[in-house]
Length: 117
Ligand SMILES: Cc1cc2nc3c(=O)[nH]c(=O)nc-3n(C[C@H](O)[C@H](O)[C@H](O)COP(=O)(O)O)c2cc1C
Image 1 (spheres, rainbow, N blue to C red):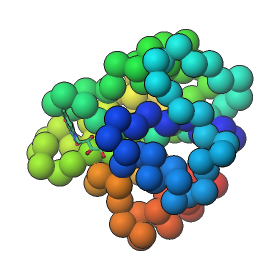
Image 2 (cartoon, rainbow, N blue to C red):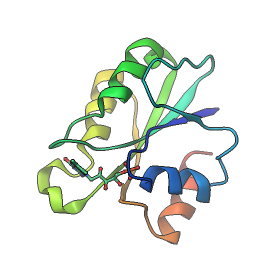
Image 3 (cartoon, helix red, strand yellow):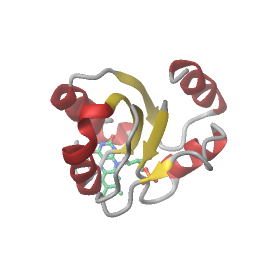
Image 4 (tube, rainbow, N blue to C red):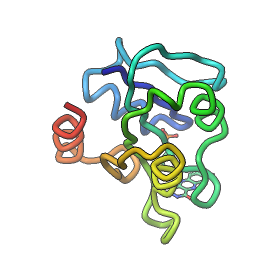
């Protein structure tokens, strides 16, 4: 399984680092990146419940290989909490594997490590 992630202010990047995936995970920056194996995506939530644009662009090309989504958000956004993950899950018919607040706690990291196995 491969991993791809998008991070604007560093929270998702920190999660990837703490999972020990820094070397193997593909960082999505422009959205023009490509991946050639089944993958799990890690994303933040933008706007009000929006999928980041670079993630939308990346999935438009690579979404056939997507197996699941781990999504970060902030509970202060209320009903839009982590909604990027729900958007992606619906559009690509994959599960939301985990919703995590900002960069997550140590318990979150352990739980994510379990669920992405
Ligand atoms: C402009 C902006 C909009 C955001 N909108 C949402 C949102 O709608 N829902 C949510 O759960 N979190 C929202 N967030 C919180 C981020 O998704 C969250 O802090 C995430 O951990 C950021 O990840 P990153 O540091 O890897 O970019 C927003 C943050 C910013 C700065």
